[in-house]
Every structure is written in C-alpha cells, then in structure tokens.
Length: 220
Image (cartoon, rainbow, N blue to C red; front, side, top):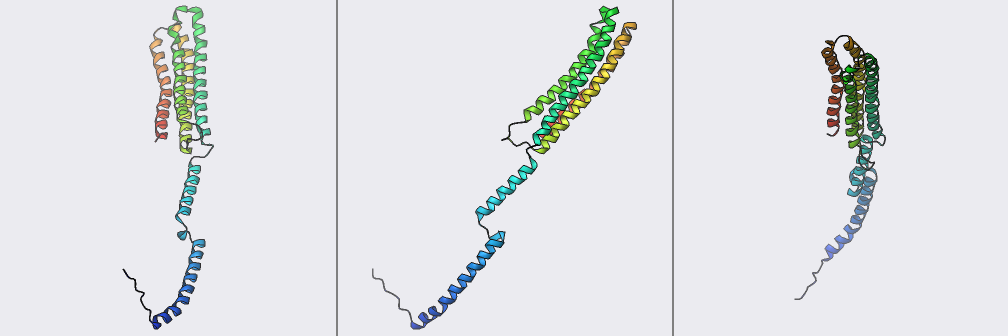
C-alpha cells in the first residue's frame, strides 16, 4: 500500500501561520482563566478534593453529634440509677427493720409476716440494677461511636428509675414501720398494710417502665 502526502496549498499554509499564534494566545489565556477559577471557585476543584472536603465535613459532623464527653452522661445515668435506687431500698429496709425489731420483742410469732416491707424494699434495688446493666451494655470502648443523644437518654433512664425508687423506698419505709407496729395491736390491719405497700412499690415500677422505654428509644 502506498501513502501519498496531500499537498497543501499556499493559501492554507498562510492561513495556518496566521491562526497559530492567535490559537496559542487564546489557549494561554484560557489556561490562566481556568487556573484562577480553580484557585477561587470550589466548582472547579478536582474530584479528589471534593471527596476530601466531604469526608472532613462528615468527620466534623460526627464529632459534633458524638463528642468525646458523651459517655459521661451514660455513666452518670448508671450512677444515679444505682445511687438513688439503693438509697431508697436502704431507707425502706432500715425503717421497716426498726418496726420489726420493736414487734419481735413482744410478738416473735409476727416477725415473718412483718418482713414483707423489707422484701418489697429490696425489689426497688433490683429495678435500678436492671437499668444500670442495660445502660452499661449499650456502652462500648472509644472506637464505637456513642452519640450525645444516647448519653442524654441513658441519663434520663437512670434518673427516672433512681428517683422513683427513692420515693418508693421512702414510702415503704414509713408504712412498714408504722404498719407492723399497728399489726401487733390489731391483726385486721394486715391486709390494708399490704395494699399500701403495693401502691408504694408500684411507684418504682412506673420508673422502671419509663426507663425501659427510653432505653429502647436510644437504640433507634
């Protein structure tokens, strides 16, 4: 196969000589313009820089929603649940125990029936223990993200079950102390005492239910 060079007319050659410098100047000015746009306008940046900026923005957003101090609120929820719940249980047990000791001196046969307030006071601490274990189970070492929302929800869980347990323990302690003393004098008061203790105990149960709902919401 033979290749033939196409002849170029003198007119076309002169035209190329005239256009070439203009094309070079136009290309140079266009390059400078694009360079300025690249430096000043984000729309002309490379895809890699856009990806880098997006990753940095997502990291900043993640740090804002899940700061390093967020687990503090979860730990505070565990503390408040156990501290207030056990304080209420301890007060109810001690106050009821005082009344039982007084009754046992005169009527030893009534000691076993008088232990009901002590048992119900101990159940309050179990409510707090359940919530504390659930909160601790949702927390993990630093590589796992723990958002501020989860921290506040766990704090609310601990406060709800802890404060209601404290109130329930206070009510059970007072009712148990006076109830067992009155039961020693009048046996018919036993049923009424048990009902009052149940309604005092249910205050802690309400806090447990709310804490379980909040803990479920924190998991999404």
